[in-house]
Amino acid sequence: MKKQLILCLTACVALSACATTKATKEAMSRAQQYIQNAEIALDAAKNAGAETYRVDDMNSARMELQSAKSELADKKYAEASISAQSSVNFSRNAISETETAQRRETEEKLVQAEEARRKAALAKQAKAKAATAAKKSKLAVSGKPANKTTTAQPAAKTNATQQEPAAQKKEEPKKKSWWQ
Image (cartoon, rainbow, N blue to C red):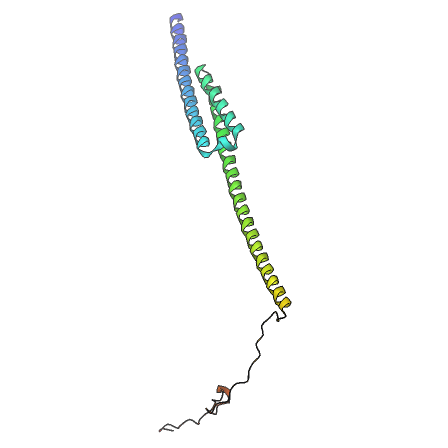
């Protein structure tokens, strides 16, 4: 009976050791996958231009990634997974905020271009008004009327007969057809 109990306990210890090893390998594999995802997200943030717009988020993402790698090396797989996921979140936030900042810059450039176009149109309009006013003042100094008006001359009489307007024409009676 003692031998059976010892064999049973030995089997339980061996099985639990195998289960722990399998769980540890899964945790390590999961942590490595999270670290790869964090590296990919960090590269995507760099490509999006986040280093220009979101320096703090990029630094945080790098620090969390570095922490995840060192925790993986220390076999702290759960902590490594958490740090890697945190790095991914910082990278995603950096990308989102960068896109918002870039859209805002584009809109500001469009507004500035429209404002410049509007100012140019107003300047052109003011220049045209000034030119018209200068022309009027020159004409006033010379004594000529500012607006040239033409007086209507009576039409010359001709021998040709004038046609009556369409409303005043007399209608010819309609001819009756052969069956009426």
